[in-house]
Length: 109
Length: 202
Image 1 (tube, rainbow over the protein chains, first blue to last red):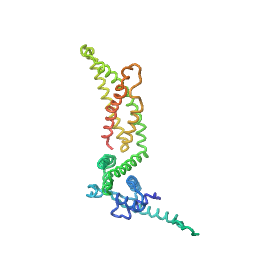
Image 2 (cartoon, rainbow over the protein chains, first blue to last red):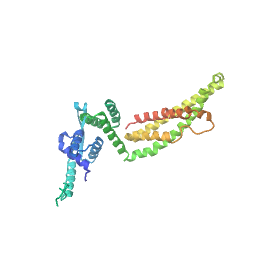
Image 3 (cartoon, rainbow over the protein chains, first blue to last red):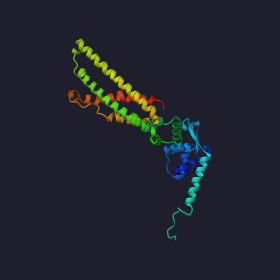
Image 4 (tube, rainbow over the protein chains, first blue to last red):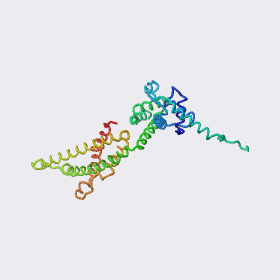
């Protein structure tokens, strides 16, 4: 099963965050990596899709005061999710072999 | 403005599951989002959730089997009732005379007309409540859109009052031609239907 690019970004961000992976933290990771705005709608609908596919497991954490006493939706990447992310990364690495996206300098042959 | 936006966020987020509402509002509060930004984010999520519902068969089935037929039926029924109510209101209110109460026959006739109108109105409201309940029960979380479509069908399917030259003096008055039928559709159909949708279990 090949992932979509946003699904891959979410899995990677969640894996990087480990035990601290939840909605706002994943969103911040993705925004920092892509330098693009990540909408809450895209984040949570994709999270549901990933959970339906069995690629992540989510649960409600404890309420915290800085969130107005509201709980976080915690995320953990499953073994199946890790395999899917690895397959996606491998496919991107393979297809990118021999291709350079670094712009060539003027005058270079 | 910021407080108003946060109030709207609270209202709009009621359309989400409780856990998701807590998680999303908590994320926005933790990120220090402004009210306008939070509202945009929550509206985006609610919009996506509502649209996703329509990728399944259930809302389409409810639309075809309940929303359109019931909306048309209630539209026609409310038009007929509005027309009858307008004619009797014009007769007994605009052209009131104490003679209506002096003659025993007129008194009985007046009482009978009032009772019939009230009974028909109550029947219309009950039918609307039951329709709303059925739509809410079967649409589940797509109720907001099916409810809005029900209102569109209700107001667009049939004219508010049937066109008739027989009672031209009554329907020459804007109140009986436009205002009263609109009030009847809102009070006797839309409000009971919304009530039915709201109490239907998800």
